[in-house]
Image (cartoon, rainbow, N blue to C red; front, side, top):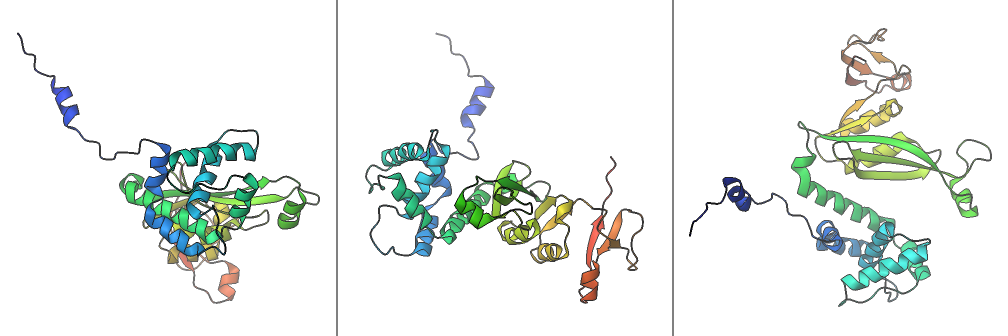
Length: 287
């Protein structure tokens, strides 16, 4: 009998262990990012319900997430599929409610701080598991932009959102989002009326960014208050320059012709109020 030695590449593959082992199912993936500690904090924020309900934070969140991935012609149809999936996954636990109106009523009654805490818990878990992979040349690169979305002309939306600057326009929603540029990962977002300020939105989203973040935006995010907020939050930023923005040289003279180097951003209203200028570096990229 002849003995054949195993090829060296097979020996190496058998000895190698992956640096990260992912979950083998959708439920395992959700449990990996929504940890028991996050659920305890979320339940504490919600507090004890006034009356017994089949919809606690765990059931509400899992069924809601499953609905977003279900296919169906209507919300009730997707709800039935999502609820069946939850019951199959947690057969030994108390079952959620059976009707879609009851689910929607419980979802409306869920405080927004609970959802924000869950989102923060997922971001923290992502950063804990993939911090090294999210880092690129010493920075965590993020991009931010905003856009308007027209909504259906329902009475409720017209009353809550109103018009977006144009007469007889449809109700409009403004959405500002932050995305990780290396992986296209949706990191955080903020919603508002169609007339909302994207700079105001971004100021509120700065708290979601980790240390060593580099924020990349277009020229619509040039603003004194936003710059001050980013400097205070220790967030690095790279913003496309606008011809409408005036920057000053080191001797506090308006920069007539753009050139690379240190400049000062100091709008007139900030000068009138005695606020200090903001130092920045102007970069020129050949087109």
